Length: 407
Image 1 (cartoon, one colour):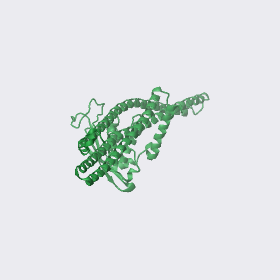
Image 2 (image 1 turned 135 degrees about the horizontal axis):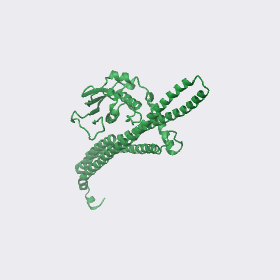
Image 3 (image 1 turned 45 degrees about the horizontal axis):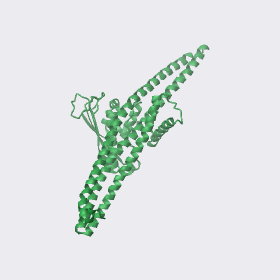
Image 4 (image 1 turned 120 degrees about the vertical axis):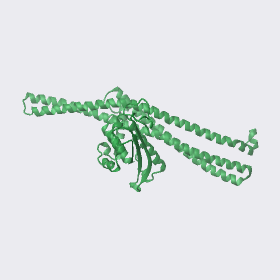
């Protein structure tokens, strides 16, 4: 849940801020599984608190499902060319059949991040589509979804192919396999190279974060199994040695729980933010593709105008009766070309602003994620060291020779 302003904020607002200051607070809560099998889906409560005048009231609660969030993302992508639209979590065909508690919570958290990024963006927060998403009833949302247009009308597999095509295009440019046809702007080439490299490094970091989560879970399970075995051994031995073995087993099981808890924290606060930024880079690539399309369209119209000019000159020299029609077509084409140029220039301007904002936000978010990672690892290491250290006197008492350095 975050606070937003229509103008660039000078400081963060809280829910208790004076009502004279514009704010928009959004949270995604209470996931509930509905339906069965392939028809199953998760619904969420989306709670909005705001004093924006074009909203229905100070608080609104609506029920939304994943496809509603997709609709909002698609509409924003179509309407706000040049702006990096926040990414959504992927749709998992595998998870759809089991909807584990962990998956549901990760999905809820990712959707909350998405809608809050939209709501905190200076331009996107003014979107009529966002207002509809946050206020419309379920029947209205279902009707709106049926009217989807544009590239996001495609199936998820088709959409992923679009992103892959963009990635391939950027890769070819960076590696020199293909001369860029969009622009020869050095700063733009530098941006594409940066995005390409960033995705590789983020994906690599996310892969190893996943392995860290897996390692913590496996170690936790191994400690749990060892703890059970040690307690059984203690019950078999009896006396002082048996008691020590039982305590060793109890400590192992306790540490197992700490490891499992830390694995969950690592997943939610470290791996997921890294994965989210991999998705964010893919969204930036989609914007890069839109910029390339706008540039090509502008160039094509410019070339067509030159041909129209040559044709118009010929018609005027031959005093053809088609001159009037040709002049009309030329004026229309020239107006279209001027509009295409303005569109391209707007995309360039917005992208320049967006990359600065993205880098600032990335620095902040990655700083938090790595700080939480280091803090969690330090906490876990201290817990493990304290637990084993507390057993040393009792273990030494059971083996007197150990204090003299004997085995």
